[in-house]
Amino acid sequence: MTNKMWGGRFSSEPAAIMAEINTSIDVDSRLFRQDIAVSRAHAAMLAKQGIISAADGKAIARGLDLVLKEMASGEFAFKREHEDIHGNVETRLRELIGPAAGRLHTARSRNDQVATDFRLWVRESIDEIDALLGAYQRALAEKALAHAATVMPGFTHLQPAQPVTFGHHLLAYVEMAARDRGRFAGARERLNECPLGAAALAGTSFPLDRAMTAKRLGFARPSANSLDAVADRDFVLEVLSAAAITAVHLSRFAEEIVIWTSPMVGFLDLSDAFATGSSIMPQKRNPDAAELVRAKTGRIVGALQALLMVMKGLPLAYQKDMQEDKESTIDALGTLSLCLGAMTGMVDDIRPNTARMREAATLGFSTATDLADWLVRALDMPFRDAHHVTGRIVAAAERLGVALDALPLEEMQAIEPRIGAEALRVLSVENSVKTRTSFGGTAPKNVRAQARRWLKKLRSKA
Ligand code: ARG
Image: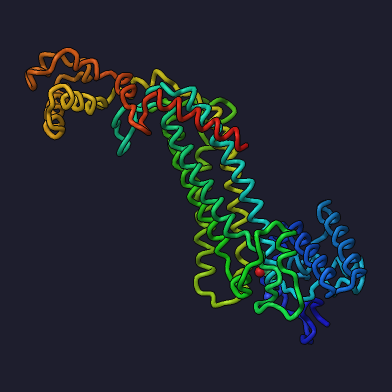
């Protein structure tokens, strides 16, 4: 016999290059814990159902525990000739317990095995990422509470638009991370069905108890269609798309850290713990971690693209193409965890230069909307007219080269005689943010309440 797993009808060895393209052990050895847990559950169920003897069931369980120990020790020599994790586990099991090992594969296939293994692996990854997202949110909410009243420019088109608070800006990312967690949670719920027992594609004639294996492996239920169970990888696609969106969120914040730590902007400083130097320019402090988070987003989004392309032309049921689902997924989810750790570290680390932020918030006539709103409120002007009058006042300030709150009252009155001295009060950036009390607005009072709400919620969940 050539290959022990499937070589019965073969009379000669595969070409070396055939074996090389076919093997997946270099990647799926990462799934040994899941693979052994799945086999343990399957063997226990086979014995309980009388499909294998109790003695064989026991021998298999004991043997699998030994294999697990060997693999967990890091010293196990995975062999490419056994193709994948399933072949490696089974071969070693046979060495340890003899022919009883051959009964383990009754009423199952590597197709339902790998679909089950990978669901377990992805499920664990989701839980890890969820915890990291929670820690990231906590760091953001804490910083937001500390800077609920720190005024900075809010931007549209990267032009100063209206003053906001730094805390409000940080809480925007808390909201995004909450939706990211929701997407992961949704994917987790849908993936939590157990394919084991679908066998190769059609189910099996043995009297399985699929509910038992599903329960033992922590699944909500067995999957209801054997073809679907082995043929789809939408659970991976969903998780990768959640990961891609999360990475894009992180990347946008990373981009802001890069821009804001530039001395040309000077909003934020990173301590030595999160800055790197240059080998030639002694003055440099570079935000490498933020740049790398921004860049690694490409790998994560790429993994989603790659698997979508793998899947798009596959007829049902299992196709070997699907073996390509693991490498980039494992890389992408590991990369996302790394990025989340780095972002949390940077959020803790960043020190805002509050004076510089405030000064920048006054640039670009950022309180012009406040003046227009005053005209609406105090003079009962329609907003469109108020917008026009304020535009003319901004033009006057620009012509004289002064900020709006430094424009002499007479200059304003030349444009709109009913403007009184009390209008000048609405022009400070502090007043501007203080009055933005609408639900979801940037007023320090709102930001404090939202930050506290988040911290309470995050603490009770953690
Ligand atoms: N290594 C394979 C994979 O990851 C396991 C399933 C192999 N099944 C098969 N029919 N050749 O997809």
